[in-house]
Length: 241
Image (cartoon, rainbow, N blue to C red):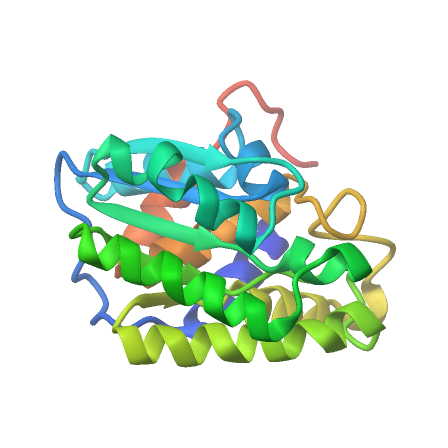
């Protein structure tokens, strides 16, 4: 696990953020809505990435409150429809947006790229109009093998997200790049899935990868990241042999 954490920290550094290290964008007492699908819904669990982000910020001296807004199976059209109900009406200061896996993965029942662009742009615009700052998360992989058709199709969706983040001056956590970097670094030693349980939904290492990417994008320094990782340690866990 330690090696995986080190790989995740390195990947987060490669992805970078739009803030100087140590300049934390989130402030004490602020609320963060986490909009997403089943990955985000599960991420609100005890060891999920939503919980780890909140713990990591607190370890850096910034106490915040999470507003979980992940629903299994949801795509960009669903998230746009419920944006006000599940996020904006609760008056968050920030919202992270994780959307794209189901838009691609659901195939004929997904959302084509042109409509996805419209939906995501409307979500960001409505947040910013309401005074809510947005962090865009690139969509994580659909299977831990980049050459597969779903991941190749996802490239255009993620390219759009990166362009939109720059255009709208949103923070960006490039989780897809982080995930690819970890899997590539594992190389021939990779046996089965290392970040997911089924190729899509995160296992504990995947949730930590996502949390590290979000915390880096919020501006935590390397030292603060180490404190965050320490805050995630399970005191009941037995040390590795």
